[in-house]
Every structure is written in structure tokens, then in C-alpha cells.
Image 1 (cartoon, each protein chain N blue to C red):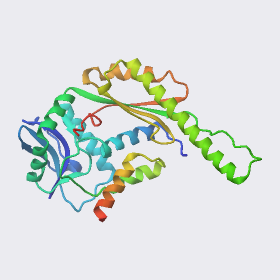
Image 2: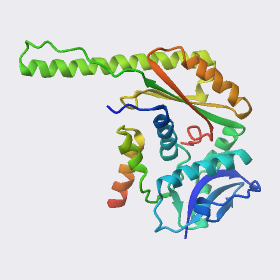
Image 3: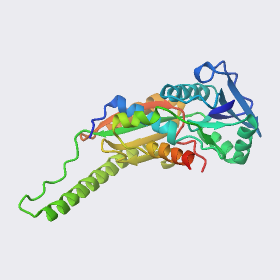
Image 4: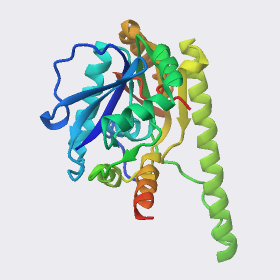
Length: 225
Length: 62
């Protein structure tokens, strides 16, 4: 028997009438004022794609009942003592992170490029070596231009939102399709309004397609290192 | 390059958070996750989560 971790919360735990993954028992392991919600799991049972989404739904329900820190999916402990020892090592940082995310949720904005990147055509009269180098250079230039554009767009979005920088996280050009991946930590009670504001701020750019998600548990802002 | 729909992007953002964000507990053991990499391979995009899976597999193999 192992414990498959879901979320960390302050003790005493909220009274949850929840089952764990695949209907297995949900366990609470507590130490030093904090505790871990986890599913009692058999180590030889492989996690599947639906388990990841069920973990998300479980974390959502835990975070709706009490401030919580989502734990990275797939983290398991051999025993409750091992889970408690792990919490003990970082107790102060975990308590501080819990205070930071209390009453807050995460909104996610993804900006997808509307068009494919098109590097400048290479002069056809050039020899094959030069053509190759010029094609590489054109690809590099196109990539850098996209990165600069993505940075400019995300700066405009953040400025429009007028939100503290430490409550915003973003990456640009994480794949060929994605211009910006952005997360914002917002008060849960204002999440609906702020999501609408975010949609409006992101809709001004003709070259990207905004995709909004959330409110979600504060995954991006739960890290303690 | 495979076009990414809004639905694909939402799923990727969520799975990226499940696998790459959240608290990393010291002394953790990451148990095997079947099928998660297929989400990424199916969408033909490269995100950090794939690297996470690769690293976890390398750790188990070594």
C-alpha cells in the first residue's frame, strides 16, 4: 500500500465526504499543523490518463473546501510516516505557501498563433551550402521575431490587467503553436470578473487566438523552492 | 506542425500543470504514469512535461 498525494492543507482538515482516485479511500496524514490528502493506492497499479484528470477534480474539491497546495501528480509515499517526514522537512515553506494562496485561484490564458510561422524564402540561385545556411538563418530570424512579438503581447496583457507581477507567471513560444502561456493568481470571489477582463485584454491582438481556462487550483503558484 | 485547437490547448495547459507544477515534496517517489505521454505525442507538441516524463524514466532505469 502506498499513498498517492493530492494536496497539502492546514490542520485540522476540512470535513470532506470524498473518495480518492478510482473510489479508493482518501487519507489524511498530519504533522506540525499541516497535512497531506492522498489516496490509498496499490504500487503495482499504473496510473492512467483518466487518473490525472480525476486527481485534478479531487484537488479542485479539496481547494474549494479549504486553502490547499496541489501536489505534483504521480507523487507517492510508501507510508504515512514517509509522507509526514517529507512535510516536516519543508513545513515552514509550505505554511507560507498556503497563506499565499489562501482564498485565491488560478486563471490560465493561452495565446495560440493564428498563422504558421513563414521564414523568408531563400534566394534560389545560391549554391546548396549557402541555401542551407540562409534557410537556417531565415528560420532563426522568424523564430526570434515570433518570440519578440509574443513578449510584446504578454507585456501588453499584463499592463492592461494592472496586477502585481508576483501574481503573474508566463512563458512564451513553448511550442510552434503556442505564443504565450500565462497564469494569474486571483481572489477566488473575483475570478469570474477577472476572467472576463483577461478575455477582453487578450482579444485585442489579431495574430493570436486566446484560450481561457480556470478558475483552477493554484498549481503554478504552489511551488515553494 | 499540427494545428492545435482550443480544446487541445486547454487539455495541454491542464496536464502541464498536473505534471510540472504544484508542490514537489522532498523524498518523493514518482510512480509510473501510463498513457500521459500519449497525450503529448498525440498532439505532436513539445512541452516541458515530456522532459519530466523522460527524466523520471531515466531515473527509474538508472
